[in-house]
Length: 280
Ligand code: SF4
Image 1: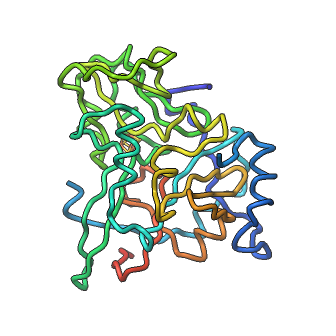
Image 2: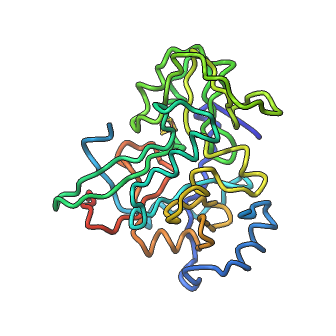
């Protein structure tokens, strides 16, 4: 997996879009499996502002991305009931202590006084402040758009934690609890066990994606609220067998990105629907 932490080398794949007008809003399961199968993908704090801007047509670039895949996540808040199954699935897979919530579900209140839940993974920012501030290059971005941490390089300065506007990073203050023996040593894609004195975070289950498996949080969501998607192939899928044309799904549902005004270009899209207010 190619990696970089040089802003000048950043691949900035296009958000989904282009000439999608005539495409259906969803694909059949068979279509998706065929399509994804060919690509190796088969489905087998934030307390204050919820400042979201609408997904914008003008964000759609005409150029094709250079990478084979460009992973994104779509979180459909209409279906999230706050059960935290995603959090638990992630913690179990990565053998994390309870306080490390790589995907954290926040209880939220909208402007009308209604309540909803908002899962927050790492946003896999296209312009990740965490990476830019790392003094030793421990945080890097892959050619598929995943922001990962090499814990063998991390010196634990925690500058990245301060820089992340999404509170998505966690410091390992203590030695990890004894974990199940794994056949492979920890890698940035599958950092288990975590290393004391370093920073960790959500990795979108980077080790699973090339093998056609869903991230733990996506497969663990009983409501199908989480989708893993690919900007290149323009498809997304969830745990309950729903597959969609990514660009159309985002457009038709007025998807938004969290704290878009910061210019981090998150690769996580939210679909609202319970009356939450959206910033202009
Ligand atoms: Fe880095 Fe935070 Fe963006 Fe994740 S959400 S890429 S940790 S700045």
